[in-house]
Image (cartoon, rainbow, N blue to C red; front, top):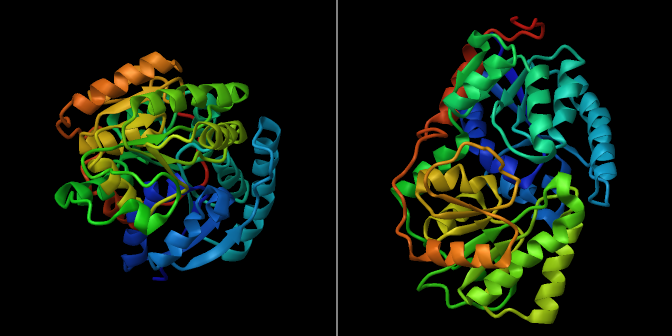
Length: 385
């Protein structure tokens, strides 16, 4: 029997860490052939050029799709997605995969789903059924309705996908592959590199070895006009905190220009001597940095996923992770300097939490590969009620 060709589309920096162990497991499986497509902001230097890390990890890339329009507003998000549909349609036509796999909920992932579903290619959706705010909420559930096989990350998500009318036999809780990486880090938690020496970045050279925090704050697409004001509250709070801080650049979303401009202006005018800024890191290095931090501050889903498993205290700001399933390590605050400052001060004083397995126990990648190798792949379905 010929190997099943599984085409995985990675469109952004965080998506790679979400799928890395599954990519390895697919590549290593005797009955599968990995067709890896890199697209969107994962190809752009200003957002960390994730493709460099992907190639360094030894993955062969079948196609690269440049599709991001400048502007970082709702109109360019829609046009970027439209370009993605056209370009990915050609990619799938040429690669002729047996199944296409799309990841989670970023706005441009719907392009992968449309291009596959409209060509009668079985579509596999990873991490559907979760709840958040912003455009991600709509995109995730739209991906679910276009997909034929659902590999979800939690029991809560599984039940939600079934309630959307999907066949329960096609909804499988595999956990999240990013937890596989977190498990590796938990087993060897030592920070064995200097982040500034290894990754450069910009800003002050910090005395971080006695303790530090990590900040990662993205714009909320439904609040993109307030992105600059939102992140400015966090910048002011972290400067006033006067504690060593590693701050990561935002994703490409509507409002990311506002977030980026606020960071640049604050850096130039206020010259905070306790903050060092990075664009990106290798996934395992980033998780090692998180594991050894006092807290993660911002609105990244890493706070609710990986940090739950690693037990890292999290200060979650605003609405981006609205109603998403969370463990006891998370404190929710508004876009308010004093709330952010107080919660971060408390987090720094807090011991790390016990590990939570709400998003998996560290074996997701191999589960996903085995399901892809053995499940019936179909592209026709009917709602179950």
